[in-house]
Image (tube, rainbow, N blue to C red):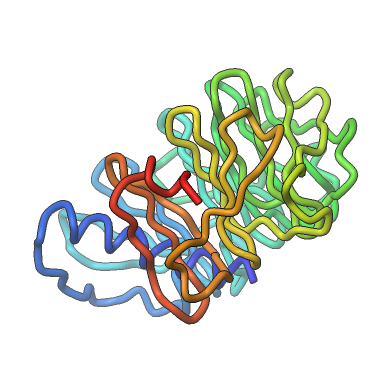
Length: 271
């Protein structure tokens, strides 16, 4: 399911760029590793995580090259994050770090007791990892060591993160949304208005509005998750997989009905 979410997210990003520039898109020669799950940019190189591994696109050579050096062979790369000049890749065999624009990789899993990494997010000097069954992990030292942050987290299948000031929101697979107000030291479910078994596919924040994409539609909170309201007017499919912002507009990617693009983010909050 995470694969599908990321595929739709890629479509959303494409639509945002198209709307912003009206430029024509040209297919690149590759990569040929199945679905492209994530991107990261470092210098003149673009890193792409795919269903069977990773590829690097060099702007100077204008071609994709498959990456083997240090990454496990034929393993999906589900997520990526940039911290300074470091690239982190989340896989089904843990987290890998590249310090040379993706040309070589080293496993950085010390303390990571669950290697099924769904998501990676950077907040300041901290790197957060959401795992399938192990909850939330954080690294304070560029991935050299990881610590669990699961106090109060009653669902250990963690997907998307979103950051708003000192607040960290974590979406789960079947447990709704959790909020931490102390850098992840403790979590509390914030599901008033959501079903307790909600699968959260994506989280997005603009200003004081928090949006959650779920299989029962898009929900909005204006009070740090204390309550949620469905904002589904006009959606012909309530199975929302991804969210993104273009200026003040929010885009929602769905399973079978494509991408929805309401007039303004503020308008989405009225139902």
